[in-house]
Image (cartoon, rainbow, N blue to C red):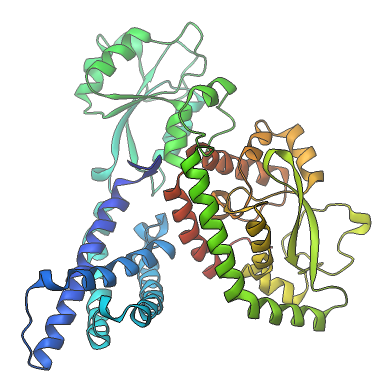
Length: 462
């Protein structure tokens, strides 16, 4: 994987993204040449229209990221990838239309754009036909050796067997930390020099997956492996990098304290995040006002009660605040204010409510909380005080998610469906802790783009 501003991106995704950008530039140039030939004008030097070509390629590449064209399923299924490409190109047309209207001199002519789009779609599909299987093959996976042969090693073995895995386990070494449960594991005593063994397997990384580290940590072996140039990772850090979440079953307070991250409080990050929140919330409230008004009318027509409702939530540093939402449930959904988890096909949800939940329209009034500074656009979802009290008792490190400002969308929202139980809350907490630990403006941008995918293809909305 390649680390970009503290967030890891698989090599296959980076390679495909670079190829797509080059192909979009080629498509833009081909569209220009074809149109120039049709109207019989000189083509001219490519360097003279670099800004125009970039204004074509970059918005389309952004749309590809936003619709999930680089997700695991897109790398595995040509049919799935093709559908996402068509959606991305359609979205790109809208973006380019806005750019053309705002800055006409920065874009290609509309006829050039039409031809460029026609060239772009087959080129993007062709590169996936050509490289799709190769990008998902073992040739692009990092080779790792696992020190350990117990339950943790079994988890790595299962993770490596997944289609979207970015690594392949080339060897297991059973250490003196318990009885091995992986048959193919080689006992440490049968290996004369572990560093030579790792080099001979052409491994680029060694993962320490011991069940019990006290009096079992092979310091001499790890030092020799490290000095050969092979990366040495502990189990929790490896899982964090590969899964995009912090595994609650393996981390402990000392790991969280001494590992890198949790820098969201730095002055520059905080100022830039707040400035973005103010500008974006003002813009979105202005644009979405007609949608909010129409939805409010529809809610009033369908069911009795107010179109908007306020609900108490827990925010930054466990401070309570009220969020404003469009009502999607019956007015009597909660008796005596008792908080209840939303269920799949929840009968309390109205017909209008079911639709606005799927497309997230009910969340739009929360932009007011963002403007006031109680929330951010990106961050962990704020929970009800009753749920927070229960979850802090049952889940370790749950209180730590309140060390960052809550958000309308977040890393957990784009990676995990709607949570309606303690177990769901556990999984979402793992993603929330990853976000809090690895926050950067780049990760915020990635989450905002990917939120469009969640809106277009709702999964788990209740």
